[in-house]
Image (tube, rainbow, N blue to C red):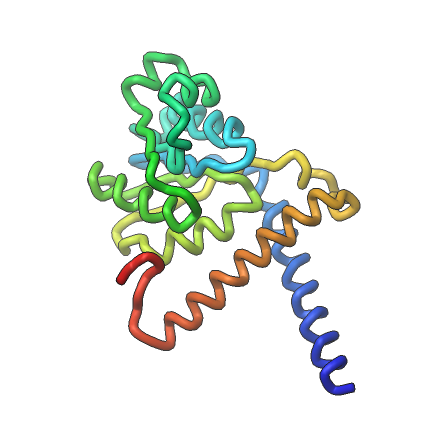
Length: 203
């Protein structure tokens, strides 16, 4: 009986956290107008065209000097990415960099910080999907130096924009999976805080 009660309590805690996470995701869009930054970083993933378009739009609006597109597929070429982003060739050729090394969000964070260091940037606008932003920022803040300022620019996910998104199984699966990944990082960071500070991927 005690184990059943414990299980029910854990489920209730998970559900409370899940809906708080979902509310946070929905409230992140539409994004507020960001202040000027040195660079913009777009993290690729599902529906990357929306993320790339948003990043290029910030560049066109004079919000930054350059854009990094992190996590580009190795089978894609520059013209593929330009077409997906909707950037003019002039702007794209002068001011868009492609990062091919990142294969996941941890890789995105490391690629982002390395690019910022190489460019000597002190401020970035991070562009990714609304549901991905909380986890992306956890990974980024885990490796970001203190002198690098980060702003967020969340791109709305159509499936999550409805007030009754929870009635759509695909939307629930997406949110639940992302929330679970987010929790896993929180646990990882809590464990790391108890011992020597070793970042993911470091040896």
